[in-house]
Image 1: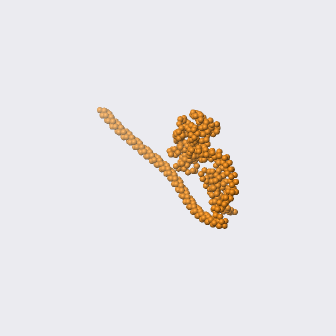
Image 2: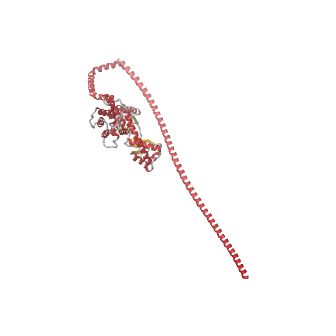
Image 3: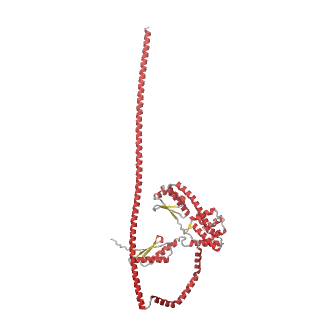
Length: 517
């Protein structure tokens, strides 16, 4: 009984101890879990603080970098604005200086004009005084000789007529003989004057084109980085670009007018568009070539319409249009061909030949010049081949081959075309002078100045449009300098043939010079 109770008590005690142990273990476990949780929370807080600090540092660093970039950009903008202000200020100063120079020049000219007016007044008074003296002397001579001026003149003329009658007859005979010798040349001049019923404007072609720029900064954009834009333009168009110190302008140089025109249109379009880079240059060049080809066709059609011609192969019409972009000695080839066609038509009408055929031959006589840059051979041979290729009349082919005397003309129309070609090319102003004639004219101009007594040296400047004459100041005074200028001017007018006007400037300069030793 006691053992049973004791066993029960032990069992109960064991249960109690087990419960207590379980409670203790659970308590310790909870406490340990709490510590772990607190540790995790602390670690999370530390990580969050660290992330926050890193984020703040990166944000501050990025803000600092943006601030540096902004300051740099502001500094560059300020520098650009400063450069623009400097350029504007320099330009304004240049304008002010130019205004001052112009004002000074205007004052100087006004002063010279006043001096000239005063000298003219004195000269006029001297002339009037001389006339009065001459009048008095003449009256005195009439009193002494008892002859009036008219009576003396009649008496002298009668004596001369009596003595010179034989010489006058000989002179008249010589003049008649000379007139007979010159009759052929005079008749040719009259014939040419009668034939020149057609009048056309004078067209002078050049080998360069100037393009105006909106500002000088555009030159840098056309050149491009490391010159890639200008190299692309020159390689694509086949022209040379000249970019120098000329303000707001560039020059296109090429002996091929068609290439030069395409390059000019391409560059003008690029400047208006503003997007200048190699790809855009090639794109606009292709478009411009297409547009120019359409323009060439229009030139050919207009030439046919102006002359009243029809039934011409479209390809040949396009070749005729290309003549607009060719020149010979400064004369536009298409204008020259139209002029020859009109002259040939007029001459054919006068002698009863086929007017349309003569016009056709005149228009096509220089057709080879349209493509002589693209093919080997003279323009006459190329023109004959083209006329045969497109089925032109034999008369037209012969006119093309014979207009320079390479072959004999086989028809009257061929001779008419040759005559019309000569008239068109040789009339005054139609073509530019050769360089030899130009140099010879300059030498003659300087020689006229150097022949005058008292002239030290004469220089032809401004391409022969001005002659500057340096006189010896110890021999020539200011009044004589004006007389020399007039004398040279009269000699130039009587001895030289020249286009436009020639300005004669006589310079009298006195220099005092000493040498310090």
